[in-house]
Length: 248
Image (cartoon, rainbow, N blue to C red; front, side, top):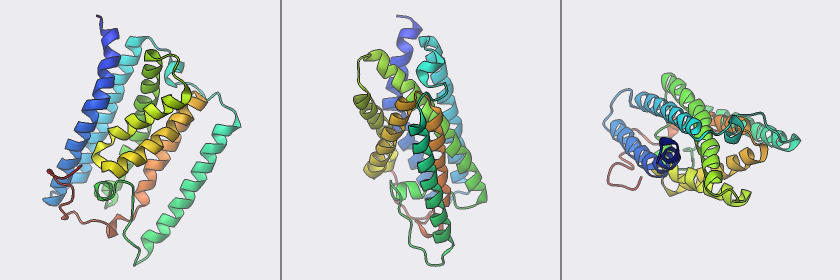
């Protein structure tokens, strides 16, 4: 068997087995560093995940080239859908902006309640607490929006179609959503369910438009919105939640 025939299954195996375990291990290291009061722990975490995401995106590009797939087959083209997809993204963007405005107001209130996000404390303790961390998180958010769509929608949908050419759109969306949720194993059950639902939305948008452009745009906006979560009222770095030995 040549490299081309092995590359796609090997990458798929890594995405389904290696990525979730690597994510959980890396996340637990972050929590342990925060609990120990190590300075710069979040920034190192953001930088590590940023370069790892681009490295995986590069490997994915090599696999796509080895398969001989055209750019259009992996979503690298202009959306072919009419006004519906664009209207959807415009509506979601408006909703995100409105939510961001509410978040800014709440974050400036002296007695704002502790924030609640999907994934709970596992996610809250990852969020930035100062300007330097916010810049690092912003780069990571943009990176995730671009690379995760390229990998989990572009490559994954093409690989799924290559294995099961007759698979209809609905089961394709379900499979892609479940895989994306599983990749966020480190967030626990709540975070996995939330990311699976987001994955279903992004997969539908990709398959409907035939392009990664709209999912990437929406994904980046959703991830950047986390910058407005008032984490100053959330969990303390000294709180030993979700350390090794506890569910991740």
